[in-house]
Every structure is written in C-alpha cells, then in structure tokens.
Length: 293
Image (cartoon, rainbow, N blue to C red; front, side, top):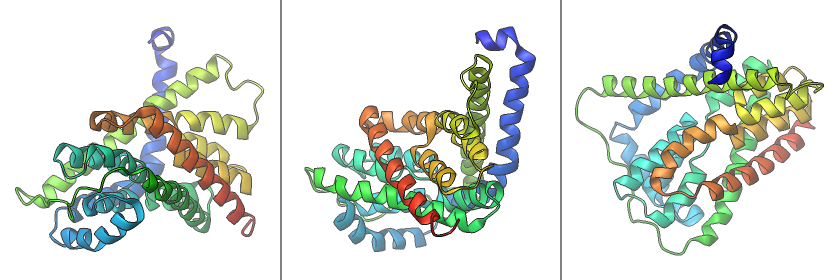
C-alpha cells in the first residue's frame, strides 16, 4: 500500500503491463479450453470417463474414481481448477479428509494450452519445446504422487464418478464459470507483476543477469519469470521454466491454498511436495532438452 501511495502512476502502469501479459499470452490460449472443459464436465459422458478412470486412480494413486477424474480435469484445464475441484469433492463427501492431501498434490497441474501454447509457442517460439515442458511437468507430478500412495492409511471413498450438473443452461453456466476462473488468474498475474516491479525498485534484482532475475520473478509470478527466461533458449532456461511452472510461484500457490486450506490440506506439506515435484520436472526437462537444443 505504501508503494502505491508513493507512486500510484508507476504501479498502476505495472498492473496494466501485467494485465497486458495476461490478455496477450494467457487469455487466448487458456480461456477456450477452460470453457470447453467446464462444459464437458456437465455432460453425462463425463461420468462414463470417471468410471473408466476409477481403477487406475485406485491402484496407481489410492484415490477414488471421482478424484482421478478431477486430476484429469486439472491436467486439461490447469491452475487453479484442480484445487477448486478438490474443495468441491471434499465438501460434498466424495473424498475423505485423509485422501484429500494426496489428491490436492495430484490435481496441482497446469494445462497443455499454457505450456504448449503460451510458454512453448509464444515465448520460446517452438511448440515442440512446449510439449517437452508438458511431458516433464506431468512426470514430476505423477512420480511424486505415485509414491505418496504408500502413505495412505485408509481406502479411498468408493465414489466412481463426479456428479453431473443438469440444472439450468449448460452453455451459460459453463461460460460463467470459465470467465470467473480466467479473471481470477488475470487479477493474480496483474497484482503479482506489480509486486515484482516493487522489488525491482528497491534493488532486489540489482546486478542480476536475465536468468537470476527470471528465477526470482518466476518464484513470485511464473508467467513473467518464464517470459524472461525464454529470451535465452538453452536447456537450462527450459528446465528452469519447467521448475517454475510446476512449483507455481507465490501467485499460483496463493490461488490454490485459498481453496485447499478450506479442505484442511496442510499448507507446508503441500508446498514441500510441490517443490519436490518441481525439482523432478525441471531435471527431466533439462535431460530431454539436451537431445533437442
């Protein structure tokens, strides 16, 4: 607040730049898929998919079929759809409290439209690199969550599918839901982008190279960090982008924790798991990039 009071014009401009970054890079690539996935989950075919996913979810990750379908939805849509879905399942009793932590770690993913469409195609100017990032991201998430299954104390709730919303206009409800989600993402990016400018003004990035500044900015807000790192296309910069996107940065973590804390998910344990997932994902991206770049 002090920074805004001292120089409102400067930081209003920073917020505007954050909104521009969201509007140009994130909105076109993610909003259509958010709408389509929101519509898809309201169709009966989604229940059939939940039933098909149920055996894999139970055996592979010790979660219910409803939880497995929520994880699939998260992989298609990205942050923070997974966290919001976990809260919905918990409040409706479709997952147990003991199961919720493992599910929250599995549902903490970005989607293909962001990594392939935004980071790969728009930032690195190479869609193939986006697919490398996506594969590495999923490997990091799934590897850690597979081993988390051994911490399960109870069997998952026997719920094979997510309930389908059949009331009202499906298109209207899906559009409203996706608009609210994408606006929340845009607001977070804009605010944390301004926070990054404040850190720059007090000398936090002084004498740093592009890579170091990209890491620090990415730990605050991953989109701006990836944009900086993509200026130098190397295996290291690609790996760091994958690390930042998998970890999420403070901006994404705040969005997720806002939902997960209400589902009684331990914040410190969740952040620790995210860090481990990010390390595995970044290492995988680096090794794969060595064969491409």
